[in-house]
Amino acid sequence: MTASPHAISWGAPMDEQMPLGVTITEIREETPSIRTFVFDRAIDARPGQFVMVWVPGVDEIPMALSSPSSITVLKVGDATAALFAMQVGDRIGIRGPYGNGFSVTGRTLAVAGGVGASPLLPLIKAGQVDTFLLGARTASELLFADQIRGAATLMVATDDGTAGHHGFVTRLMSRVDLADFAHICVCGPEVMMAAVLAILDREGCADRGQFSLHRYMKCGVGLCGSCCTDPHGLRVCRDGPIFSGDVLLESDFGRYTRDASGRRQRI
Image 1 (cartoon, rainbow, N blue to C red):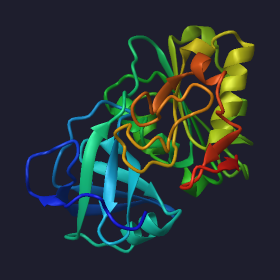
Image 2: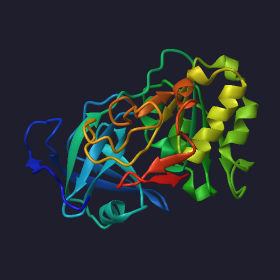
Image 3: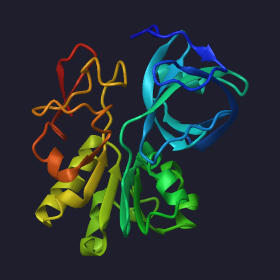
Image 4: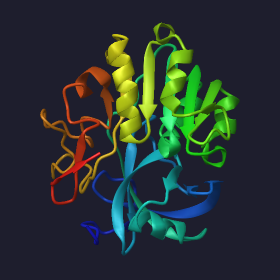
């Protein structure tokens, strides 16, 4: 997808189908590979919901909101590279919010890897996370660590051992009592999330897991089917992006995704 199917509505009221033009007001370098783009419009969204971000002339991609007026971006492809080339004052299009979001009512454990901390940050800011397990490749890539530390018990892990536990963030799960938490909210690379789900399943609490999935999306509104999961046909954009762990146990989660043409890609 290289051209938007929509005309951008610069300054018009928010509409689910029409991208709203917003102006970038601040760009923060969170880590060497991750930046937060703040814009001049607050989106009324629940923690975990996402928006479709239109980078004019490049692509439209799904992005989690890290606050009502910001997205936090890892540079991984053409659209994100174009975002990283933008400056304060440049314009992008925002469409949404979409999806179901996290639902927490009791003690909550959050588990994140890399930029996966982004959709969990609104839960932190709302005071809805009690313990946060945060992982990254190296200490300089630990995202939002200071903000999390000020609001919850923070435990960190790095692949290279430069901060916290030397190893994967999933290893930290043995240091908490899962029975203490009503909800376990998870976001990060799918391989990592699948490992978390395996632990929850082994401990008999997969149903308490809430996993934020990322899939290739074209429309974001449940029409094109490009983000459907096997074998149930659940749409990540409409039925998710947050799914209960017990639902994911019977799906393609952690095994494969699909590309723009619908072909399977092994994770």
